[in-house]
Amino acid sequence: MNPTEISLYKSLIGDIKSRVRQAQNKAALSANAEMIFMYWDIGRMIEARQIDEGWGAGVIPRLASDLKNELPEEKGFSARNLGYMVRFYREYGEPPILQQGAAKLEGPNQPILSNQLAFGLPWFHHVLLMQKFKDLPTRFWYARQTLEQGWSRDSLTVQIRQNAHLRQGSATSNFNQTLPEGHSELARQLLKDPYIFDFLTLEEPFHERELETGLLEHAQKFLLELGRGFAFVGRQYRLEASDQEFYLDLLFYHLQLRCFVVVELKKGNFKPEYAGKMNFYCSLVDDLLRHADDKPTLGLILCQTKDRVLAEYALRDIHKPIGVAEYELTQALPRELATRLPSIETLEAELTESLKENGG
Image 1: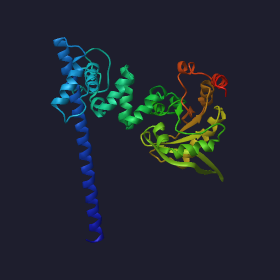
Image 2: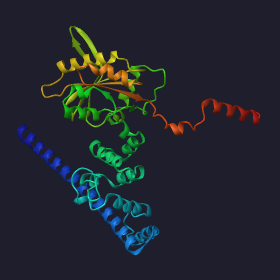
Image 3: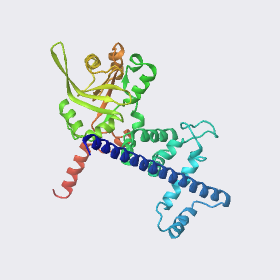
Image 4: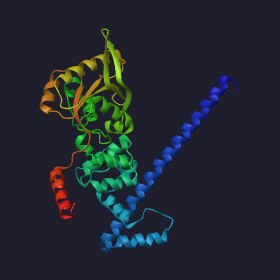
C-alpha cells in the first residue's frame, strides 16, 4: 500500500473500532434497562401477591431462600434486594418505561420517574439513593446529576456525603445583571458554595500557591468537585497588556457553557478589591483569548470565608460575570453532632485523670 492507502486503511480500522464500541455501549445500556425493568416487575408481582393474599413482609426472606434453590446461578435475589425491588415499585408507580419527560410529582396520575432516570442508572445507584433519601425531589436531583456528570457509585456517595444538592447554585454572583436570562441560570447552576477540598492535607498556616499546587496534584478530585464540563487550560496563565505581565491562578474552558472560566484562590476573608481585579482579568481573557463564538468569560473567586452582603455590594456595579464562593479543606460536622463531641480540653483532662489513677 502507498501512504494514501495506508492512511485510508487506518481510518477504516478507526471507524470500525468506533462502531464496535458504540454497539457495545448501546448493548450495555439496553441490558441495564432490561434488568431495571425486571426488578421493577418483580417488585410489582410481590406487592400484588402481598395485597391479594394478605402476605406480610415475612414472605420476602422465604422467597429469597427458594429463589436461591430454584435459580442457583443467578445473583441479586437476596431478601434485602427483593425488598428494594418492592420499594422501587411502590415509590415509582406504573411502568417507568412507558413514562416520558422530566420527573413530576403533581397529582396521582402524573409520572414521577422519567424513562431516562429509571433506566439510565445502574441498579445499585438506585439502591443507594433509596437508602439515603426519602424525599423524592432530592433523590431525583442526584439521579439527574449522576446521569449528567457520569458519577460512579463511589463518586455519588461522596457527593451525597458532601450535600451537593445544598451547595449547587449557591454562590454569590452578578450573573443576572451581566448575562442573558437563559445563560445566567446555566452559569449560576455551574457554581457551588462552599467547595469541599477535603482531599487536601494542608494545615494552617499555608500559602495560596500551596493550595493551588495541592489542587492540581489531585486534579481528578478537583475536577470532580468543580463539576462536569471544566477543561483545564493552565496554571499561573500568563497574559500581557501594555507591556506588563499578569498571571491567572487557574484558567479553565467550560465545554457546555462555551466560555473561559478564571479561578482565583484567596486565603482568608473575601475583600471587595478582589472583584475589581477579577473584572480586569476577565476583560483581558475576553480580549486576548476569547473566540468569536465564545460566551463571555466567567470569574470565580474562591475564599475561605465571605460576607454575602459585602460580596453582593462588591459585585453590584461590576460589568463582567463573577461569582464568589467559599472553600473548605475539611467538611464541617453537623452542628448537633459537633455539640456532642468532647473538646480537646475535656479529652486532655480525662487522659490526665486516667494516668493518675493508673500511676502514670
